[in-house]
Length: 343
Image (tube, rainbow, N blue to C red; front, top):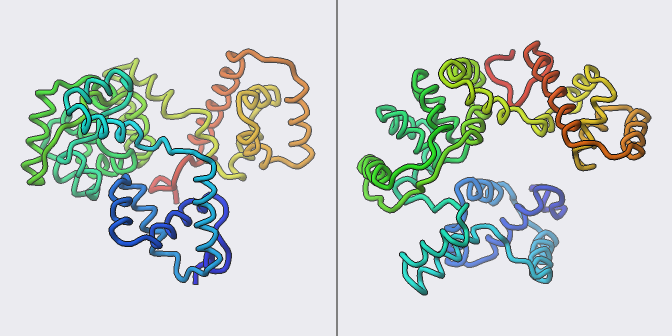
């Protein structure tokens, strides 16, 4: 019997637990309608929880219903998929062409929904995606990887031949606007590969952030091989990628022991200035790696200090990042999941 059977869920997983219970309480038709609206990763998480809950006692069911009721009482409406929902209603009211025009005016920063032909890639195994893309031009591969979440894109990239990694990531970062004609041709190519799929695709894609996220989530060997090569062909892009690949917030993934290792290398003034730019909740990650006395002292220093320039905070955080990079290079810190570089 799962823990949920004994005690209603609390903490980060409570929302998923309650959602899983609510879906299982619905009739099949209603549940199917809801599940069809979820993104692949959301559906995977919810399905996994539905399968793992085991026996669910009445108190857990009551808690799930109560939680749903409270959300209704709060009068809130989720923003998830809002633009897509509005566009669907506008299309019914004024037609596809006018709806597209209106959405571009009122939500210019929103990406269009991927076509069925390209959207299906989100549901395929990374190895299958790599098999589909291996003979395509790096530009086409870059466009297609940008249809995926970063974890899947990273796994698909890793499954491709190594000689494709650098040209593909370079194009991911520099892609920018893609002509509708090129998108149509690409869509037809994918449609022929996976058959019976059709539609339209996003025409504005890519960027340094997307490329950096893929590199961060890929095997470390990808970064070690690709970054020096990108530095030779595009120094500005290399600097931009480095900035995006390692931000101060990435330190939050370190465990308490590794945070402690990092703190021992940082001057007190640098640490104080770097933490001034964080919310109190994020500072707790660092306080937890200190003794109670040291943490209380640091809190008092931060609270009693006057205002500080944003530039000083940024400078201190860059110094902390530089120290973290040195410790990573020395093998004293490990960022992300362990891989074959560590034994």
